[in-house]
Image (tube, rainbow, N blue to C red; front, top):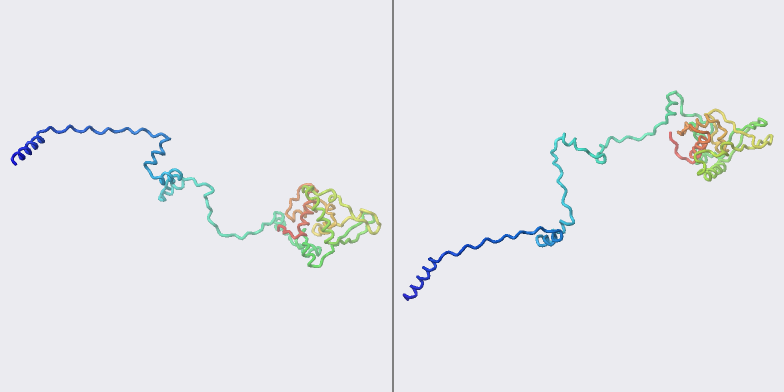
Amino acid sequence: MEDKDEEQVRLNLAIISAPPPPPLPPPQQKCRQPLHSSSVLCFLAHQFPPSILLRRQFFPQPPHPAPPLSLSLRHQSSIPVPASARQRRPGPSRRSRSRRSPSKVLLILRGKSLVVDPPPYPWATTERAKVKSIGDLLSAGIRTIKGDVKCKRCDSQYQIEYDLLEKFYEVDTFFGMNEENMHNRAPPIWMSPTFPNCRFCMESNCVKPVIGEKRCINWLFLFLGQMLGCCKLTQLKYFCKHNDHHSTGAKDRVVYFTYKTLYEQLEGVKQPT
């Protein structure tokens, strides 16, 4: 028993008297090589989960936050605003109204009336240089259009009657077949029309229409007989002025617009006021 105690004491003294162990060397730090473009995805695959990689690769970063709303008015006014972003404040609703042509305004200022009352013919309206539509004429029982003519040879004066639908169909057919080649100019047959034969002296191509004052011109009769080319240029300009057409230019152009306007009036196309 005493021998065991002595051995234990010797071991303890040996441990105490033994020199301390040398210190461990410091761990060597490995220098990380720069990642090349080919190894970036491999490195990221070890650092981040696949969901984050997909989100960063395909979805762009959110834009910069908008400037705070507490900017001063002076700073806000210096920021240019594109024209497309400017919005007008809705103003009070206005009722649209038709504007009168300058020629009609001048007539009103001169004290002249725009209304012809009573109309000179049953197929004319109370407005200057305007006729009723075919629908209104047929509903009123008007199927025949009369007009005064005068023979150049025997000076006989009488009236000629035209069937409304028959003559309108002739003008409509001619206008539809030749409108593309007219180029806003009346053809020669409208500029120098063929006149009817005289029923008294039996001469051919000698009966001309009687054209009175501008307010009393029988426009529908001249249209159906295709004799608007007999009018003077001043008379045709009068018609164009009261139908809001340019009255300047050559006579063939003014004759063309006269035919076209009367055609639209008969069809019921709304004319400007």
